[in-house]
Image (cartoon, rainbow, N blue to C red; front, side):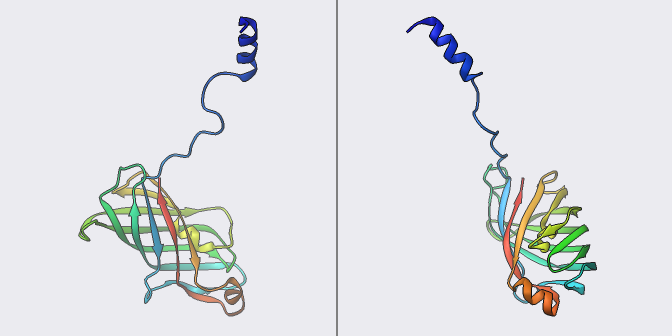
Length: 178
């Protein structure tokens, strides 16, 4: 092969290195999240068709936790107590502020520690406003410094919320700490 041809092909190809975007960082922990069957998240006053200031509180169960990056393999499940306020309706939530405390359980089911989470969402969220309750940062304890992102799908349709309002939310989804 001609050396000039190799140089020309290398110049067209560009520098050697990864092609495409950089891979997303690996999560420290991912878990299934759900409201306990007898204790859904509650909203005071109830969420309705038009946005209004509401307080949300309740508990969430974290189960089936896995650690893709291997840093939290000792965490198997968790119990979350959450409190927040927001400007919310059936289809949106903004100015979400709150906190959560997670009690972590190891693979044997025994408590192994806690995490404090600051919940904060400023942007308007459509479709599943309750997702904003699963977004924030771990400020202290296990997984400190990790960003929290998640989604929870309501067990009831949004149309029912718009016509009857919603004072409680049973649901399930996934949460990631990365």
